[in-house]
Length: 172
Ligand SMILES: Cc1cc2nc3c(=O)[nH]c(=O)nc-3n(C[C@H](O)[C@H](O)[C@H](O)COP(=O)(O)O)c2cc1C
Image (cartoon, rainbow, N blue to C red; front, side):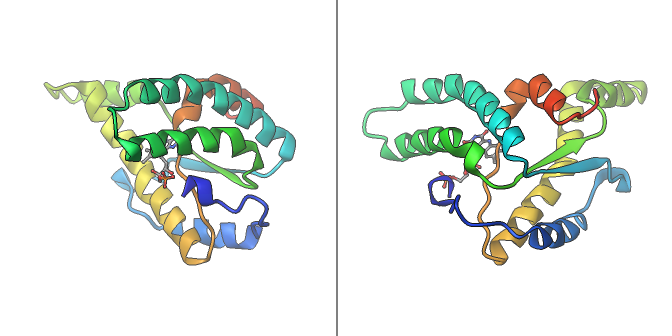
């Protein structure tokens, strides 16, 4: 998918909006739509995101490459696709960045106050991110059914503060 993204093809914003409308029907815990969907098209901002993403992706890909067992061509291809995306992210015409209101530790605290005897960080991580993924995946499927490819990433969180500042995403 990453190597097949047609980066030169324009992405109609009405299609992005329609797919978001569909995606936002996804189920959420507590019926809380505690998300914000940022759609970034500005080339200058995409360039900065691309640069930060590359920096974050590099050690990950290097680690992946250093650990590929001999003859494992499939994993080699995955690593190669990861680096390909890093080199081209700024050319991707639309970056859709789903955000969550709140941090893991505040949800962990909430669960802690209910007296659960468990790994609260793990429990909270499941709760917080599980709210986002069904919608994110629905969004990607809706795009796909309308002829638009998409690729999921998370490694930009390795440069979270820098990207948040650029996009004026408030703390928390
Ligand atoms: C939660 C999640 C996070 C991901 N984060 C990244 C990422 O940061 N960078 C990356 O290159 N691929 C990432 N991937 C993998 C890509 O989404 C990849 O395109 C997808 O697995 C399809 O594989 P292909 O591009 O090799 O066909 C992630 C996948 C998932 C499910």
